[in-house]
Image (cartoon, rainbow, N blue to C red):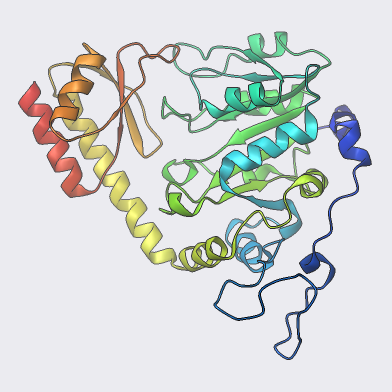
Length: 350
């Protein structure tokens, strides 16, 4: 990509450019020598394991992520869930009541919520009938105030990945930031767009430990981008946004690569088996291709089938209110035992 069409300084909000970031006690002194006496941060001095503020830059955790993902540490930002990272992007690059972003329904609902929260216009461009980005229509909606385009791939709720050529075309044609949300990247066959960071200075990748890593409860979101973009986000992030317990649990889980891969393999195997069974259920009209840890199915009457499954003690997601998703249910792939119960319930209702 020619970097001449991408000007980061043009995108950053003026007040953010002028902002002098808050400097915390642990930003100013980082050498945790066991012989040091820390009287600088107004902490409770009695050790209970969490009486000290956490590392504001999560250096140890970033170092391990850097090794695993092959992304330099200065190109990594961690947040209190992906939603905080997404919110930081809006607050760094979008001027309220002035700028706009583009989202591609049906997609993750927080993009539009965060746009509204930050008073940013959201221009929606529907995916095609095959759930792919309509690049021509997207670019037609771009103007000088369009700061970001959000792509969720694999997409939620449709479960499919976007064609790489379409994402590349947007990265090469759009002068703003292209955000690729890879929450479900560990369940897809292709490689992460993090391998393309050196090719595209306007690429931002969002990942999470909530899905494949099984850590939804600790709230840890990850952003990979150019060092320049990460530096802007670091200026405005809260000083201690990732707590000590989250950092410790995340590091413990990231290092347990064998368990993670075993669980991913199980989910992929179960996903294949569940897809085959769903195709045999009488009220299921269509199964959509999936590269996520869930399956989107079109049924005869989504409201009716949702209620029937609830009565059998099984909660799925009714996605019928989403664009292009009339009469669809979203089935998260569970454990073998959970999937067995789901299959029995579906066969009983058929």
